[in-house]
Length: 309
Image (cartoon, rainbow, N blue to C red; front, top):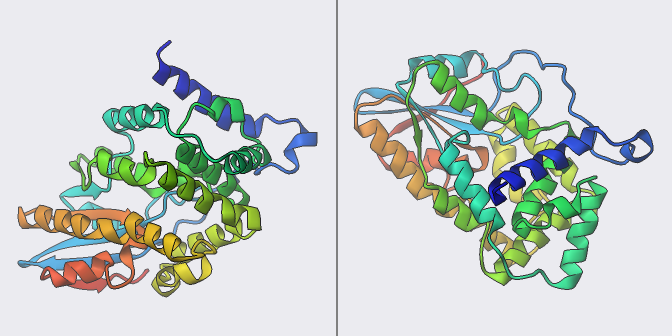
């Protein structure tokens, strides 16, 4: 069996184990997601953007969700129906993207400082994840898996994130699906190679979970997204319990703001070719002076929020 195949099997087994724990252990583990679908409704912030006499749309997404959130509400469904193509940061179902992600996740990395490594292992065990199965992975990938597992304490699950649902919707509707970024760009941010950057990323993941406020912050983020509450999203750094110093602030800028000009250019270029674009990007890319609505306005678009119906 190839290393990539082994990795797939290990991750699948580790996440599946969350639901197979005996009752005596399961009481402190992240609970299984509620399978009851939420009522059909408009969710997430949506903008209509217009230039050259033609409309496109900009949609803020969430990478985790609840049952039923992957079914678009009336305004999103109408925008998808009126579009010619769907543009995402990346196509999450592209086998090439998955191969690159797994290959990078398995590349050797500098070891974490011993104390930080112990904290990560303790957090993984507290989330009922198999530390031996995850050990070969990049520490930042372990932190991502930990965050996804802990999201279940807020009733959220990556299976119901928006990107996968939008990719499937595009294919079902016969719409072209376009990636606005290259996978290498995201990997450079998500899975750094420098020892200090890796340690900083893991530390920023663990701190809010260890404080007990991380789950509450994630639940608040999901609620703000669901209600298209752009003001609360814009104030994320104040209430997320994830910005302790200038280093954290710089990392957030690299993760979000630094990518936005390239994303805006990509959306503008697709629109300029004559396409009506449904562009869907993480909701935190939508806020602030470097948010995509502001950057697209600077590129000559009329930008208008689309209210919920």
